[in-house]
Image (cartoon, rainbow, N blue to C red; front, side):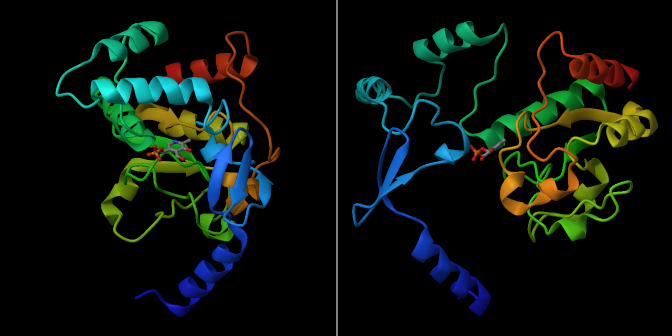
Length: 229
Ligand SMILES: Cc1ncc(COP(=O)(O)O)c(C=O)c1O
């Protein structure tokens, strides 16, 4: 049974979170009241809810069968459109988990650097300093990784470094000290999750995006720092 605070929160949520249907950029609650959906499932609904062309294609494919123990023709076509080598995953959690394993295997290193407030799925490797109140993260020069929930083994903390987002000096300092032990730096390219838990209070430019265009100075600097490791 949930505790009284959880139940109170659930009651509040029921009063303000609409349930019903969605189309395009809008949600309707069960009473027919219309809302703009600013979250769009945190990003994947990029064309809007229930986009007809996508829905028709998905229905067409479902009728042909979609779950096989081998690679289907459509998967090959999709991968060919993206890059040379791809591993498809069923969820973001799996994708980041696989990416971390590949990075660790390739570099022979264990440490992962992630930014406070960033969410990369529900696995134990990066569910650190994601939801906690910003005060729990300690001094920004020596941040404390805070587990996202009970059940994450304490020993996992050995493999994670957390840093405030957008603190380039802090990032440079950590890369100079630990770069040789870091297997990967993982980041949301655009802060999609931290805004809701006020972690952005710790960033200098709360709404900033890290633009990784080929010519950007930030990308050049990031590559130089990663090369150091
Ligand atoms: C940036 C980011 N990475 C990973 C995930 C995890 O994806 P999934 O819920 O498909 O496991 C999410 C989900 O919101 C996300 O926003």
